[in-house]
Image: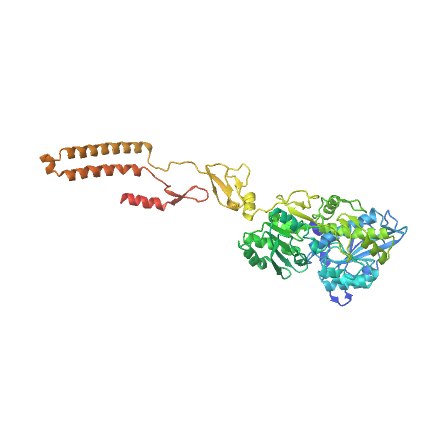
Length: 588
Protein backbone atom coordinates (compact mmCIF):
# COMPACT_ATOMS: atom_id res chain seq x y z
CA UNK A 1 0.00 0.00 0.00
CA UNK A 2 1.13 3.57 -0.55
CA UNK A 3 1.28 4.31 3.12
CA UNK A 4 4.15 1.86 3.56
CA UNK A 5 6.20 4.08 1.13
CA UNK A 6 9.93 3.27 1.03
CA UNK A 7 9.84 1.03 4.09
CA UNK A 8 7.68 -1.54 2.35
CA UNK A 9 10.33 -1.91 -0.33
CA UNK A 10 12.77 -3.13 2.28
CA UNK A 11 10.63 -5.76 3.99
CA UNK A 12 12.03 -8.55 1.82
CA UNK A 13 15.36 -8.07 3.57
CA UNK A 14 14.03 -8.05 7.12
CA UNK A 15 14.92 -10.72 9.63
CA UNK A 16 14.26 -10.88 13.34
CA UNK A 17 16.88 -9.26 15.53
CA UNK A 18 18.39 -11.45 18.25
CA UNK A 19 19.05 -9.33 21.31
CA UNK A 20 21.75 -10.27 23.76
CA UNK A 21 22.12 -7.97 26.75
CA UNK A 22 23.97 -4.90 25.52
CA UNK A 23 24.54 -6.32 22.04
CA UNK A 24 22.81 -5.92 18.66
CA UNK A 25 23.53 -8.35 15.84
CA UNK A 26 23.71 -7.46 12.16
CA UNK A 27 20.13 -8.26 11.14
CA UNK A 28 18.64 -4.97 12.33
CA UNK A 29 16.94 -2.82 9.69
CA UNK A 30 18.54 0.62 9.63
CA UNK A 31 17.18 3.60 7.68
CA UNK A 32 19.46 6.58 7.12
CA UNK A 33 18.30 9.97 5.91
CA UNK A 34 20.92 12.64 5.48
CA UNK A 35 21.66 15.85 3.60
CA UNK A 36 22.92 14.23 0.40
CA UNK A 37 19.89 13.70 -1.82
CA UNK A 38 17.03 13.29 0.63
CA UNK A 39 16.85 9.59 -0.09
CA UNK A 40 16.42 6.68 2.29
CA UNK A 41 19.19 4.12 2.35
CA UNK A 42 19.01 0.85 4.19
CA UNK A 43 21.48 -1.38 5.93
CA UNK A 44 21.13 -4.76 7.57
CA UNK A 45 24.66 -4.62 8.96
CA UNK A 46 25.17 -2.55 12.08
CA UNK A 47 28.96 -2.26 11.73
CA UNK A 48 28.64 -1.26 8.09
CA UNK A 49 26.37 1.57 9.15
CA UNK A 50 28.86 2.84 11.72
CA UNK A 51 31.62 3.02 9.10
CA UNK A 52 29.98 4.73 6.17
CA UNK A 53 32.04 4.24 3.01
CA UNK A 54 29.86 5.68 0.26
CA UNK A 55 30.79 9.26 -0.65
CA UNK A 56 28.06 11.84 -0.15
CA UNK A 57 26.75 13.84 -3.08
CA UNK A 58 27.23 17.57 -2.92
CA UNK A 59 24.29 19.77 -1.98
CA UNK A 60 23.78 23.51 -2.57
CA UNK A 61 24.25 24.04 1.18
CA UNK A 62 27.72 24.12 2.74
CA UNK A 63 27.79 22.39 6.11
CA UNK A 64 30.84 23.94 7.69
CA UNK A 65 30.19 22.47 11.12
CA UNK A 66 29.71 18.84 10.18
CA UNK A 67 26.86 16.44 10.79
CA UNK A 68 24.48 15.94 13.74
CA UNK A 69 23.05 12.46 14.15
CA UNK A 70 19.43 12.14 15.36
CA UNK A 71 18.94 8.43 16.07
CA UNK A 72 16.11 6.32 17.39
CA UNK A 73 14.68 2.80 17.62
CA UNK A 74 11.30 2.50 15.90
CA UNK A 75 8.78 -0.01 14.56
CA UNK A 76 9.85 -0.10 10.89
CA UNK A 77 8.39 -3.39 9.71
CA UNK A 78 4.74 -3.31 8.51
CA UNK A 79 4.01 -6.31 10.71
CA UNK A 80 5.25 -4.59 13.87
CA UNK A 81 2.59 -3.92 16.50
CA UNK A 82 2.79 -0.12 16.37
CA UNK A 83 3.94 0.29 12.77
CA UNK A 84 0.97 2.40 11.62
CA UNK A 85 1.57 5.08 14.24
CA UNK A 86 5.37 4.87 14.09
CA UNK A 87 5.11 5.28 10.35
CA UNK A 88 3.37 8.62 10.89
CA UNK A 89 6.14 9.75 13.25
CA UNK A 90 8.80 8.60 10.78
CA UNK A 91 7.33 10.50 7.83
CA UNK A 92 6.99 13.63 9.96
CA UNK A 93 10.67 13.29 10.94
CA UNK A 94 11.75 12.88 7.36
CA UNK A 95 9.83 15.89 6.08
CA UNK A 96 11.33 18.15 8.72
CA UNK A 97 14.86 16.77 8.35
CA UNK A 98 14.66 17.34 4.60
CA UNK A 99 13.46 20.90 5.13
CA UNK A 100 16.22 21.71 7.61
CA UNK A 101 18.94 20.21 5.42
CA UNK A 102 17.75 21.43 2.01
CA UNK A 103 15.85 24.65 2.72
CA UNK A 104 17.30 25.89 5.98
CA UNK A 105 20.82 24.64 5.19
CA UNK A 106 20.98 22.80 8.49
CA UNK A 107 21.11 24.34 11.95
CA UNK A 108 23.29 27.34 12.74
CA UNK A 109 25.50 27.17 15.83
CA UNK A 110 28.17 29.80 16.54
CA UNK A 111 28.45 30.67 12.86
CA UNK A 112 28.73 27.07 11.67
CA UNK A 113 26.09 25.10 9.80
CA UNK A 114 25.42 21.49 10.73
CA UNK A 115 23.47 19.01 8.63
CA UNK A 116 21.17 16.46 10.24
CA UNK A 117 21.30 12.73 9.63
CA UNK A 118 18.29 10.73 10.78
CA UNK A 119 19.09 7.12 11.70
CA UNK A 120 16.15 4.81 12.34
CA UNK A 121 16.60 1.28 13.74
CA UNK A 122 13.93 -1.41 13.69
CA UNK A 123 13.10 -2.51 17.24
CA UNK A 124 10.18 -4.85 16.49
CA UNK A 125 8.00 -3.44 19.31
CA UNK A 126 10.48 -4.81 21.86
CA UNK A 127 11.56 -2.70 24.82
CA UNK A 128 14.58 -4.95 25.38
CA UNK A 129 15.66 -4.52 21.78
CA UNK A 130 15.06 -0.75 21.89
CA UNK A 131 17.29 -0.42 24.96
CA UNK A 132 19.99 -2.60 23.37
CA UNK A 133 19.92 -0.49 20.20
CA UNK A 134 20.18 2.72 22.23
CA UNK A 135 23.28 1.45 24.02
CA UNK A 136 24.86 0.26 20.78
CA UNK A 137 24.32 3.50 18.83
CA UNK A 138 25.06 5.90 21.70
CA UNK A 139 28.71 6.57 20.68
CA UNK A 140 27.64 7.83 17.24
CA UNK A 141 24.42 9.59 18.31
CA UNK A 142 24.18 13.30 19.12
CA UNK A 143 20.44 13.44 19.94
CA UNK A 144 18.03 10.62 20.75
CA UNK A 145 14.43 10.34 19.55
CA UNK A 146 12.32 7.94 21.58
CA UNK A 147 10.19 5.14 20.09
CA UNK A 148 6.43 4.90 20.49
CA UNK A 149 4.85 3.98 23.87
CA UNK A 150 6.21 4.83 27.28
CA UNK A 151 7.22 1.29 28.15
CA UNK A 152 9.52 1.01 25.11
CA UNK A 153 10.85 4.56 25.57
CA UNK A 154 11.93 3.91 29.19
CA UNK A 155 15.13 2.12 28.19
CA UNK A 156 16.11 4.73 25.61
CA UNK A 157 15.52 7.53 28.11
CA UNK A 158 17.70 5.71 30.65
CA UNK A 159 20.56 5.42 28.15
CA UNK A 160 20.25 9.09 27.18
CA UNK A 161 20.30 10.12 30.82
CA UNK A 162 23.31 7.94 31.65
CA UNK A 163 25.29 9.38 28.73
CA UNK A 164 24.08 12.98 29.24
CA UNK A 165 22.30 13.35 25.90
CA UNK A 166 19.06 15.02 24.89
CA UNK A 167 16.09 12.74 24.21
CA UNK A 168 12.78 13.91 22.75
CA UNK A 169 9.81 11.49 22.84
CA UNK A 170 6.88 12.08 20.47
CA UNK A 171 4.56 9.38 21.84
CA UNK A 172 5.28 8.69 25.52
CA UNK A 173 3.54 10.29 28.48
CA UNK A 174 4.42 8.15 31.52
CA UNK A 175 6.08 10.50 34.00
CA UNK A 176 8.66 7.81 34.77
CA UNK A 177 10.18 8.29 31.29
CA UNK A 178 11.24 11.84 32.27
CA UNK A 179 11.40 11.89 36.05
CA UNK A 180 14.87 12.84 37.35
CA UNK A 181 16.13 12.88 33.76
CA UNK A 182 16.65 16.59 33.03
CA UNK A 183 17.58 16.08 29.37
CA UNK A 184 14.54 13.95 28.45
CA UNK A 185 11.43 15.69 27.12
CA UNK A 186 8.01 14.53 25.95
CA UNK A 187 5.99 16.28 23.24
CA UNK A 188 2.82 14.28 23.94
CA UNK A 189 0.79 16.12 26.62
CA UNK A 190 0.15 14.61 30.04
CA UNK A 191 -2.73 12.13 30.28
CA UNK A 192 -4.58 14.19 32.89
CA UNK A 193 -4.84 17.03 30.33
CA UNK A 194 -6.68 14.95 27.77
CA UNK A 195 -10.13 15.10 29.34
CA UNK A 196 -9.99 18.67 30.62
CA UNK A 197 -11.78 19.88 27.48
CA UNK A 198 -14.03 16.94 26.70
CA UNK A 199 -15.88 16.32 29.96
CA UNK A 200 -16.94 19.96 30.61
CA UNK A 201 -18.11 20.16 26.98
CA UNK A 202 -20.26 17.02 27.38
CA UNK A 203 -21.57 18.15 30.75
CA UNK A 204 -22.74 21.41 29.18
CA UNK A 205 -24.54 19.34 26.54
CA UNK A 206 -26.46 17.42 29.23
CA UNK A 207 -24.29 14.37 29.99
CA UNK A 208 -24.38 13.18 33.60
CA UNK A 209 -22.79 9.72 33.84
CA UNK A 210 -19.42 8.35 32.64
CA UNK A 211 -18.07 4.83 32.21
CA UNK A 212 -14.42 4.20 31.32
CA UNK A 213 -12.99 1.32 29.26
CA UNK A 214 -9.23 1.01 29.11
CA UNK A 215 -6.08 -1.08 28.71
CA UNK A 216 -2.37 -0.83 29.54
CA UNK A 217 -0.50 2.43 29.06
CA UNK A 218 -3.35 4.47 27.51
CA UNK A 219 -5.41 3.57 30.58
CA UNK A 220 -3.54 6.26 32.52
CA UNK A 221 -5.79 8.79 30.83
CA UNK A 222 -8.94 7.05 32.03
CA UNK A 223 -7.53 6.42 35.50
CA UNK A 224 -6.78 10.13 35.88
CA UNK A 225 -10.38 11.18 35.23
CA UNK A 226 -11.84 13.54 37.81
CA UNK A 227 -15.47 14.19 36.79
CA UNK A 228 -16.62 17.82 36.92
CA UNK A 229 -19.14 18.72 39.61
CA UNK A 230 -22.49 17.31 38.57
CA UNK A 231 -21.06 14.36 36.64
CA UNK A 232 -20.74 10.84 38.06
CA UNK A 233 -18.10 8.24 37.25
CA UNK A 234 -20.52 5.33 37.00
CA UNK A 235 -17.93 2.60 36.52
CA UNK A 236 -14.51 1.59 35.18
CA UNK A 237 -13.66 -1.51 33.12
CA UNK A 238 -9.94 -2.32 32.78
CA UNK A 239 -8.79 -4.98 30.27
CA UNK A 240 -5.61 -6.86 29.61
CA UNK A 241 -3.47 -5.52 26.76
CA UNK A 242 -4.90 -6.23 23.30
CA UNK A 243 -8.63 -6.77 24.00
CA UNK A 244 -10.78 -8.07 21.13
CA UNK A 245 -14.46 -7.80 20.26
CA UNK A 246 -15.13 -11.04 22.14
CA UNK A 247 -13.52 -9.56 25.25
CA UNK A 248 -15.63 -6.41 24.98
CA UNK A 249 -18.98 -8.07 24.19
CA UNK A 250 -20.05 -8.92 27.78
CA UNK A 251 -19.35 -5.34 28.87
CA UNK A 252 -21.22 -3.86 25.90
CA UNK A 253 -24.18 -6.14 26.64
CA UNK A 254 -24.16 -5.11 30.29
CA UNK A 255 -23.96 -1.39 29.52
CA UNK A 256 -26.86 -1.71 27.08
CA UNK A 257 -29.21 -2.55 29.98
CA UNK A 258 -31.41 0.47 30.84
CA UNK A 259 -30.28 0.46 34.46
CA UNK A 260 -26.58 0.60 33.43
CA UNK A 261 -26.75 2.76 30.29
CA UNK A 262 -24.16 5.59 30.70
CA UNK A 263 -24.34 8.92 28.93
CA UNK A 264 -20.63 8.88 28.07
CA UNK A 265 -18.15 6.06 27.50
CA UNK A 266 -14.47 7.05 27.50
CA UNK A 267 -12.24 4.43 25.85
CA UNK A 268 -8.49 4.64 26.51
CA UNK A 269 -6.79 1.92 24.47
CA UNK A 270 -4.12 1.44 21.84
CA UNK A 271 -5.32 1.99 18.29
CA UNK A 272 -5.90 -1.72 17.55
CA UNK A 273 -8.56 -2.03 20.28
CA UNK A 274 -10.64 0.99 19.20
CA UNK A 275 -12.26 -0.83 16.31
CA UNK A 276 -12.88 -3.87 18.51
CA UNK A 277 -14.94 -1.78 20.93
CA UNK A 278 -16.96 -0.33 18.04
CA UNK A 279 -17.55 -3.86 16.71
CA UNK A 280 -18.79 -4.96 20.14
CA UNK A 281 -21.22 -2.04 20.45
CA UNK A 282 -22.48 -2.73 16.95
CA UNK A 283 -23.10 -6.40 17.66
CA UNK A 284 -25.29 -5.69 20.70
CA UNK A 285 -26.94 -2.77 18.85
CA UNK A 286 -26.13 -0.28 21.59
CA UNK A 287 -24.21 2.97 21.81
CA UNK A 288 -23.91 5.65 24.51
CA UNK A 289 -24.98 9.21 23.92
CA UNK A 290 -21.31 10.11 23.48
CA UNK A 291 -18.37 7.80 22.71
CA UNK A 292 -14.94 9.30 23.43
CA UNK A 293 -11.66 7.74 22.26
CA UNK A 294 -8.26 8.78 23.56
CA UNK A 295 -6.22 7.94 20.48
CA UNK A 296 -8.02 6.72 17.36
CA UNK A 297 -9.95 9.70 16.02
CA UNK A 298 -8.37 10.77 12.73
CA UNK A 299 -6.33 7.59 12.20
CA UNK A 300 -6.88 6.28 8.68
CA UNK A 301 -6.49 2.67 9.82
CA UNK A 302 -9.36 3.16 12.26
CA UNK A 303 -11.51 4.83 9.63
CA UNK A 304 -10.85 2.02 7.16
CA UNK A 305 -11.74 -0.60 9.78
CA UNK A 306 -15.06 0.84 10.98
CA UNK A 307 -16.18 2.82 7.91
CA UNK A 308 -19.13 5.13 8.49
CA UNK A 309 -19.52 3.79 12.04
CA UNK A 310 -16.81 6.33 12.92
CA UNK A 311 -19.33 9.13 12.46
CA UNK A 312 -20.09 11.22 15.59
CA UNK A 313 -17.33 9.58 17.65
CA UNK A 314 -15.38 12.07 19.77
CA UNK A 315 -11.65 12.32 20.28
CA UNK A 316 -9.24 14.12 22.56
CA UNK A 317 -6.51 15.58 20.41
CA UNK A 318 -3.57 17.92 20.81
CA UNK A 319 -3.74 18.91 17.14
CA UNK A 320 -5.93 19.59 14.14
CA UNK A 321 -4.96 20.85 10.71
CA UNK A 322 -7.32 23.82 11.07
CA UNK A 323 -5.34 25.37 13.96
CA UNK A 324 -3.90 28.83 13.39
CA UNK A 325 -0.16 28.70 14.07
CA UNK A 326 3.09 28.45 12.09
CA UNK A 327 6.29 26.52 12.68
CA UNK A 328 9.08 28.94 13.52
CA UNK A 329 11.66 27.17 11.34
CA UNK A 330 9.71 26.12 8.25
CA UNK A 331 6.85 28.59 8.37
CA UNK A 332 4.40 25.71 7.83
CA UNK A 333 0.89 26.07 9.15
CA UNK A 334 -0.82 22.85 10.26
CA UNK A 335 -2.80 22.83 7.02
CA UNK A 336 0.30 23.34 4.91
CA UNK A 337 2.16 20.62 6.79
CA UNK A 338 -0.79 18.23 6.47
CA UNK A 339 -0.94 18.77 2.70
CA UNK A 340 2.81 18.22 2.33
CA UNK A 341 2.65 15.14 4.50
CA UNK A 342 -0.22 13.57 2.57
CA UNK A 343 1.48 14.23 -0.75
CA UNK A 344 4.75 12.79 0.52
CA UNK A 345 3.49 9.75 2.41
CA UNK A 346 0.16 8.91 0.78
CA UNK A 347 -1.41 8.78 4.25
CA UNK A 348 -3.85 11.02 6.10
CA UNK A 349 -2.18 13.48 8.44
CA UNK A 350 -3.18 12.41 11.96
CA UNK A 351 -1.75 14.28 14.94
CA UNK A 352 1.05 11.70 15.23
CA UNK A 353 2.51 13.06 11.99
CA UNK A 354 2.55 16.57 13.44
CA UNK A 355 4.20 15.17 16.58
CA UNK A 356 7.00 13.85 14.39
CA UNK A 357 7.48 17.22 12.72
CA UNK A 358 7.47 19.01 16.07
CA UNK A 359 10.03 16.64 17.59
CA UNK A 360 12.68 17.49 14.96
CA UNK A 361 11.72 21.17 14.92
CA UNK A 362 12.02 21.44 18.72
CA UNK A 363 15.58 20.11 18.78
CA UNK A 364 16.65 22.35 15.90
CA UNK A 365 15.02 25.43 17.43
CA UNK A 366 16.53 24.72 20.86
CA UNK A 367 20.00 24.24 19.35
CA UNK A 368 19.82 27.54 17.46
CA UNK A 369 18.20 29.36 20.38
CA UNK A 370 20.92 28.23 22.80
CA UNK A 371 23.61 28.66 20.10
CA UNK A 372 25.20 25.56 21.52
CA UNK A 373 25.45 21.80 21.11
CA UNK A 374 26.07 21.22 24.80
CA UNK A 375 23.38 19.10 26.44
CA UNK A 376 22.93 21.45 29.40
CA UNK A 377 22.45 24.50 27.15
CA UNK A 378 19.99 22.82 24.79
CA UNK A 379 18.06 21.28 27.71
CA UNK A 380 17.82 24.69 29.40
CA UNK A 381 16.40 26.21 26.22
CA UNK A 382 13.83 23.43 25.96
CA UNK A 383 12.92 23.80 29.64
CA UNK A 384 12.51 27.58 29.71
CA UNK A 385 11.18 28.61 26.31
CA UNK A 386 7.97 28.21 24.28
CA UNK A 387 8.39 26.89 20.74
CA UNK A 388 6.02 27.26 17.82
CA UNK A 389 5.70 24.18 15.62
CA UNK A 390 3.20 22.79 13.12
CA UNK A 391 1.94 20.75 16.08
CA UNK A 392 1.23 23.89 18.11
CA UNK A 393 2.88 25.94 20.85
CA UNK A 394 5.06 23.63 22.94
CA UNK A 395 6.43 24.36 26.40
CA UNK A 396 7.56 21.91 29.04
CA UNK A 397 6.74 21.58 32.71
CA UNK A 398 9.24 20.83 35.47
CA UNK A 399 9.24 17.14 34.56
CA UNK A 400 9.97 17.82 30.89
CA UNK A 401 6.45 17.09 29.62
CA UNK A 402 4.38 19.19 27.24
CA UNK A 403 1.77 21.32 29.01
CA UNK A 404 -0.09 22.60 25.95
CA UNK A 405 -3.89 22.79 25.85
CA UNK A 406 -5.78 20.09 23.98
CA UNK A 407 -8.85 20.23 21.77
CA UNK A 408 -11.93 18.06 21.35
CA UNK A 409 -12.71 16.70 17.89
CA UNK A 410 -15.63 14.78 16.43
CA UNK A 411 -16.38 13.01 13.17
CA UNK A 412 -19.29 14.72 11.42
CA UNK A 413 -21.94 13.01 9.30
CA UNK A 414 -19.52 12.86 6.36
CA UNK A 415 -16.79 11.09 8.39
CA UNK A 416 -14.66 14.26 8.48
CA UNK A 417 -12.90 15.21 11.72
CA UNK A 418 -13.83 18.66 13.00
CA UNK A 419 -12.87 20.66 16.08
CA UNK A 420 -15.85 21.03 18.45
CA UNK A 421 -14.17 22.51 21.56
CA UNK A 422 -13.03 24.97 22.85
CA UNK A 423 -15.39 27.47 21.18
CA UNK A 424 -12.63 29.87 20.13
CA UNK A 425 -11.09 27.29 17.77
CA UNK A 426 -14.17 25.13 17.04
CA UNK A 427 -15.06 24.63 13.38
CA UNK A 428 -18.52 23.23 14.13
CA UNK A 429 -20.86 22.42 17.02
CA UNK A 430 -20.87 19.24 19.08
CA UNK A 431 -23.47 16.64 18.06
CA UNK A 432 -24.95 15.24 21.28
CA UNK A 433 -26.49 12.79 21.74
CA UNK A 434 -24.99 10.93 18.81
CA UNK A 435 -27.49 9.03 16.62
CA UNK A 436 -28.25 5.40 17.43
CA UNK A 437 -27.02 2.63 15.13
CA UNK A 438 -30.60 2.07 13.92
CA UNK A 439 -30.95 5.75 13.03
CA UNK A 440 -27.62 5.76 11.15
CA UNK A 441 -28.59 2.64 9.22
CA UNK A 442 -31.95 4.18 8.41
CA UNK A 443 -30.30 7.36 7.08
CA UNK A 444 -27.58 5.60 5.10
CA UNK A 445 -29.05 2.29 4.00
CA UNK A 446 -32.83 2.40 3.96
CA UNK A 447 -35.36 3.58 1.39
CA UNK A 448 -36.58 6.02 4.04
CA UNK A 449 -33.24 7.83 3.99
CA UNK A 450 -33.28 8.46 0.24
CA UNK A 451 -34.14 11.98 -0.81
CA UNK A 452 -37.32 12.13 -2.91
CA UNK A 453 -37.44 8.35 -3.08
CA UNK A 454 -40.61 6.34 -3.68
CA UNK A 455 -40.59 5.16 -0.05
CA UNK A 456 -38.71 8.02 1.63
CA UNK A 457 -39.56 9.87 4.81
CA UNK A 458 -37.64 11.11 7.83
CA UNK A 459 -35.58 8.69 9.93
CA UNK A 460 -36.60 8.75 13.59
CA UNK A 461 -34.11 8.40 16.46
CA UNK A 462 -35.20 4.78 16.95
CA UNK A 463 -34.55 3.95 13.28
CA UNK A 464 -38.16 3.91 12.15
CA UNK A 465 -39.44 6.00 9.26
CA UNK A 466 -41.66 9.02 9.93
CA UNK A 467 -43.86 9.36 6.86
CA UNK A 468 -44.72 12.79 5.47
CA UNK A 469 -48.04 11.65 4.03
CA UNK A 470 -50.91 10.84 6.39
CA UNK A 471 -52.03 8.09 4.06
CA UNK A 472 -48.62 6.36 4.24
CA UNK A 473 -47.67 3.72 6.80
CA UNK A 474 -44.19 3.14 8.27
CA UNK A 475 -42.64 -0.31 7.95
CA UNK A 476 -39.30 -1.77 9.13
CA UNK A 477 -36.46 -0.34 11.20
CA UNK A 478 -32.88 0.71 10.46
CA UNK A 479 -31.80 -0.52 7.01
CA UNK A 480 -35.33 -1.78 6.19
CA UNK A 481 -37.20 1.40 7.23
CA UNK A 482 -39.53 2.78 4.55
CA UNK A 483 -42.92 4.37 3.98
CA UNK A 484 -45.67 2.83 1.88
CA UNK A 485 -48.81 4.48 0.63
CA UNK A 486 -51.71 2.17 1.50
CA UNK A 487 -54.65 3.13 -0.77
CA UNK A 488 -58.24 3.08 0.45
CA UNK A 489 -59.49 -0.14 -1.04
CA UNK A 490 -62.82 -1.84 -1.55
CA UNK A 491 -62.26 -5.24 0.03
CA UNK A 492 -65.38 -6.84 -1.57
CA UNK A 493 -65.11 -9.36 -4.37
CA UNK A 494 -68.86 -9.16 -5.32
CA UNK A 495 -69.60 -6.80 -8.17
CA UNK A 496 -71.79 -3.72 -7.68
CA UNK A 497 -74.48 -5.08 -10.01
CA UNK A 498 -74.74 -8.32 -8.06
CA UNK A 499 -74.99 -6.45 -4.81
CA UNK A 500 -77.78 -4.21 -6.16
CA UNK A 501 -79.74 -7.22 -7.36
CA UNK A 502 -79.22 -8.85 -3.97
CA UNK A 503 -80.41 -5.76 -2.13
CA UNK A 504 -83.57 -5.58 -4.37
CA UNK A 505 -84.40 -9.21 -3.58
CA UNK A 506 -83.89 -8.49 0.11
CA UNK A 507 -86.27 -5.56 -0.07
CA UNK A 508 -88.89 -7.59 -1.98
CA UNK A 509 -88.62 -10.53 0.41
CA UNK A 510 -88.77 -8.34 3.53
CA UNK A 511 -91.80 -6.46 2.20
CA UNK A 512 -93.51 -9.72 1.26
CA UNK A 513 -92.79 -11.26 4.65
CA UNK A 514 -94.14 -8.24 6.50
CA UNK A 515 -97.32 -8.20 4.38
CA UNK A 516 -97.80 -11.91 4.96
CA UNK A 517 -97.36 -11.52 8.71
CA UNK A 518 -99.84 -8.60 8.82
CA UNK A 519 -102.38 -10.51 6.68
CA UNK A 520 -102.06 -13.64 8.86
CA UNK A 521 -102.57 -11.69 12.08
CA UNK A 522 -105.53 -9.84 10.59
CA UNK A 523 -107.29 -13.06 9.46
CA UNK A 524 -106.13 -15.35 12.27
CA UNK A 525 -109.71 -16.07 13.38
CA UNK A 526 -110.75 -17.13 9.91
CA UNK A 527 -111.46 -20.87 9.82
CA UNK A 528 -109.14 -21.45 6.87
CA UNK A 529 -106.31 -19.45 8.52
CA UNK A 530 -107.01 -21.03 11.86
CA UNK A 531 -106.75 -24.47 10.32
CA UNK A 532 -103.35 -23.48 8.85
CA UNK A 533 -102.00 -22.51 12.30
CA UNK A 534 -101.38 -18.67 12.29
CA UNK A 535 -98.35 -18.86 14.54
CA UNK A 536 -96.67 -21.32 12.19
CA UNK A 537 -97.44 -19.09 9.22
CA UNK A 538 -95.92 -16.05 10.98
CA UNK A 539 -92.76 -18.00 11.79
CA UNK A 540 -92.38 -19.11 8.18
CA UNK A 541 -92.74 -15.51 6.94
CA UNK A 542 -90.26 -14.23 9.54
CA UNK A 543 -87.77 -16.98 8.68
CA UNK A 544 -87.92 -16.07 5.00
CA UNK A 545 -87.23 -12.44 5.87
CA UNK A 546 -84.19 -13.36 8.03
CA UNK A 547 -82.85 -15.62 5.31
CA UNK A 548 -83.03 -12.84 2.74
CA UNK A 549 -81.43 -10.30 5.07
CA UNK A 550 -78.34 -12.53 5.33
CA UNK A 551 -77.50 -11.38 1.80
CA UNK A 552 -76.46 -7.99 3.25
CA UNK A 553 -73.47 -9.20 5.42
CA UNK A 554 -72.45 -11.57 2.63
CA UNK A 555 -71.68 -8.54 0.45
CA UNK A 556 -69.21 -7.14 3.04
CA UNK A 557 -65.62 -8.49 3.25
CA UNK A 558 -63.31 -6.96 5.91
CA UNK A 559 -59.96 -8.46 4.87
CA UNK A 560 -57.93 -9.74 1.94
CA UNK A 561 -58.56 -13.31 0.85
CA UNK A 562 -54.75 -13.60 0.71
CA UNK A 563 -52.31 -12.57 3.43
CA UNK A 564 -50.44 -9.24 3.31
CA UNK A 565 -46.72 -8.68 3.91
CA UNK A 566 -46.51 -6.95 7.31
CA UNK A 567 -43.74 -4.58 6.14
CA UNK A 568 -44.65 -3.73 2.56
CA UNK A 569 -48.44 -4.12 2.72
CA UNK A 570 -48.39 -6.09 -0.53
CA UNK A 571 -50.67 -9.10 -1.02
CA UNK A 572 -48.87 -12.45 -1.01
CA UNK A 573 -49.89 -15.81 -2.51
CA UNK A 574 -50.69 -17.28 0.91
CA UNK A 575 -54.41 -17.71 1.62
CA UNK A 576 -55.80 -15.85 4.62
CA UNK A 577 -56.83 -18.51 7.14
CA UNK A 578 -59.33 -16.15 8.78
CA UNK A 579 -61.20 -15.69 5.52
CA UNK A 580 -61.21 -19.46 4.95
CA UNK A 581 -62.68 -19.92 8.42
CA UNK A 582 -65.31 -17.28 7.69
CA UNK A 583 -66.26 -19.01 4.47
CA UNK A 584 -66.68 -22.28 6.31
CA UNK A 585 -68.85 -20.62 8.95
CA UNK A 586 -71.07 -19.03 6.34
CA UNK A 587 -71.48 -22.28 4.44
CA UNK A 588 -72.35 -24.07 7.66
